[in-house]
Length: 607
Image (cartoon, rainbow, N blue to C red; front, side, top):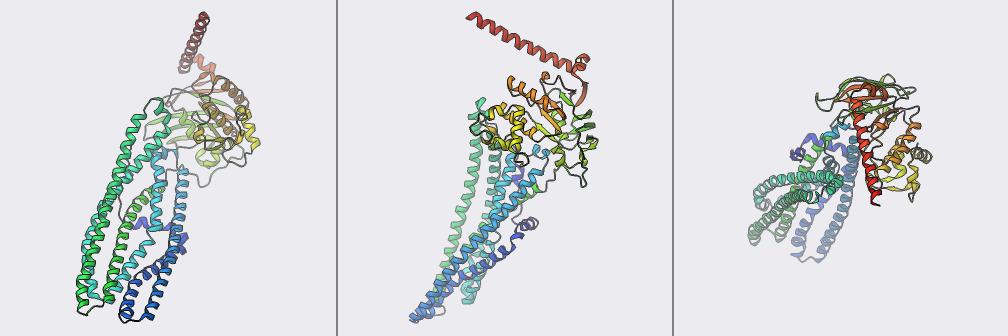
């Protein structure tokens, strides 16, 4: 189970450094932000104006029996309510518009950043956690942008205007009313502390849930084949229950805090009636002032509750922004040279010169690897699992940076080349084929408009993929579901072959590319490969030695080192590792053939 230490970050309720970076995303919409703040000021003034107009209506018109003046006040109150409603609509629209625009920009920046990071970054970061960054954490910032930063001005201005009106009308009664504030401040402080911890637990459980779901849905076939559904269900039940309990705890604190605020508000109203009522009976205070103070008190505690909610939004936003900026600040890039070298005419010659590479520290996966593949040659790499064969093609594609040595194409160090130009020269077909949601054509040309339908069809025909594509209801427009779930493994590999060849690469890499196809399909592919590899440099990684016997060069890798190199016959004559591997596979083949023959005889005898 992952530690999810990043989810443990509580951070400050307000971090000026993080807020400065967040405000950068509001800069393109500064006019809308300023307009929203002015709207907030207007709403903050209109709200507290109503109790004051109520006081005027009672003291100046109702008590004095002035119906005409009362009608004027009523119309003014109505106009105030209409104006406030219209401004609130405009403010809600603008704030939500700002929030959606800013998180759109932020989410696009994160996704672009993820595409630029090297594979080393994804090796050490769970996919579920990265999904949490792009979804949950960004959504938290949406609340900050749409109802946090701008709306907090409204609450503050409302409180200020209420205090101004209260002290102007009767400063003594205002002080009596505010005498309950110490209890409110203490309760708010306690609530913030408890809610902060509760929300931290919620975030941890959400991250755990995302990682668990991503991993186990991706590996659902393994879960089902080994009958692990019940065990997996129990694990998820535990994670889900922990998330539920954490959320219930956070709701519990809200369920206590909000009624607590209402209780303090009721006490304040009681004090107003006790103190103000006595003064009203003595004629020191008017009834209008008493009623308006009651209204102001009810109005005063509403923004106080809202500010507590804004505090939680700010708290979670600071934690989410810290995690997002930590991701955006990660510079696990494969660097591009400032002045890249461009190859005028690519031949496809590949050379490794004393290459050393380790994924971690000095735990060397490749040790002093040196070889040369001439342009147009086919080189095969063989060896036990974990010997370093796939690492070689990853380094050639510059997915990782080597620690020592040089890798050259046509005598030019690939580190001096633009990595995008380098990868345009190379097409790779892996054993585990990845298909995207879309259609057959889109999975062959990957949306590249330069590769039209004609070229897609030609590539599919050359590798034999057109045989099954033409039988599909919509042929090349046939929908492909997530990861190609509706296609067989062999069909997916044929599409991957067509994809690689449609880009007309100078260098073609096949990593166990025919291991999952049937014998008939493999014969078709081998025939196509023989034609297609003419004029191209190719690297073939294979465990079945029968598929690489015609390679120009076979390189045997053992524990990260090149132990043998030569043609098929040369290596057999040498009698080393390759010879032993060949003998093992040859004996396995003989055993399989003998078993098949024995089964055939048994079947004929039974008849």
